Image (cartoon, rainbow, N blue to C red; front, side, top):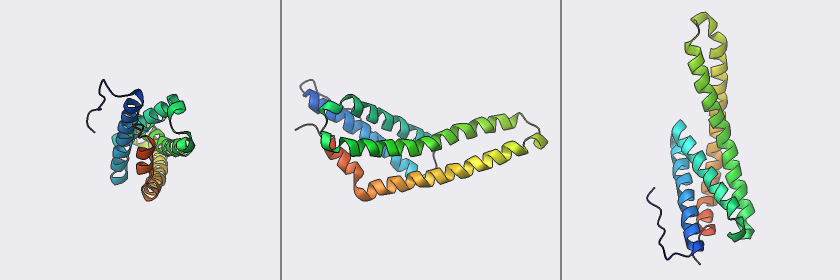
Length: 153
């Protein structure tokens, strides 16, 4: 994703814009990976970056252009909720798989059924998240966010 480009003579506004755009770029780069493959780590990294972006936006809300803040913040929340459901399933599936290893074959049927249900739910949640990401692409959300976070002016 490249290094953050902040110079000592940058205004606070320009530096903040650079930080926010960098975080946004990381979020959307990870989102592209999530769209293309079923990768637990990319999803996790996308969530971390999106949460950091959301936190920075909340902290600096007063200096960000107000008109579009609600819409952009709402879209980030939607992204985080959809990806959060998948992440919860990932963590639960991981714990179930570890627990399954400790059981006898005859004892594992209930866990196997639970794993199958959670995998099915995860697939549905991933389809929903990919739909959100497709809608973001269609509406140009990434470009809108980039323009919104351009605080150099």
